[in-house]
Length: 132
Image (cartoon, rainbow, N blue to C red; front, side, top):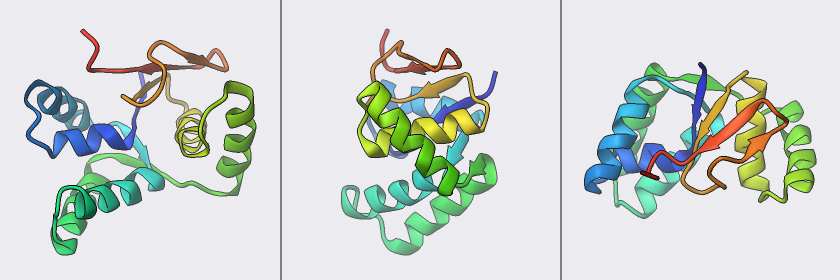
């Protein structure tokens, strides 16, 4: 089963949030699919919220890109995201994540920020891995 990881999982994997960090690390270490958006949002979160230096954030981003399959956010993804955002009442940024996951053929999208259990186009299930 192909799985996609949202940015919040990558950030938790790098934090010291006990059980959440351990669960996030486990998912990230399994090599999920991510998008270019996830890589860029991770760099932004690490440098602004977690005070990583830019070189340290870039080093982590490079390691992440080596570990995971990275899919692009291209014109097709943006167009699909706009339709998904309207159909499912998603924020534009969440819809970009969902569209990238669908385009990559993923069955699961791990995210803390979206509705746990929601099915998208009968092909993708959103899973909050931090719900017991």
